[in-house]
Length: 126
Image 1: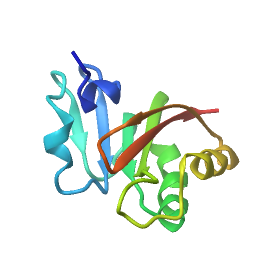
Image 2 (image 1 turned 135 degrees about the vertical axis):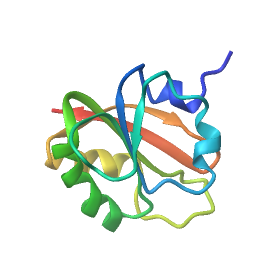
Image 3 (image 1 turned 90 degrees about the vertical axis):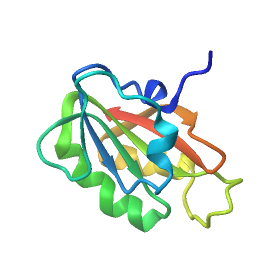
């Protein structure tokens, strides 16, 4: 059976999850969250899993550096961006996100397709 988005995000029971800038239809795609997961839409403390949606280089540059301070020591950040085949206009892709992340001490190590429009790139502190 294929994994749902929540499983692909690697969200585990009892974790803190920060979700930023998600599209209006996103929560319906996610699937059921594990028990005792705390979900926030504004940073407040440390998080085990952070997912941020960005559609441009400007958004990436504004959002990603500040998220490092909200990341638990073994936490992960998912930068979710428009696919090249999406109808959304964008000036970022997997490679440009990865390159920028390295300059701020994050290392990309996995990717998955969220839906027809979005891909998610996983990062950890380098």
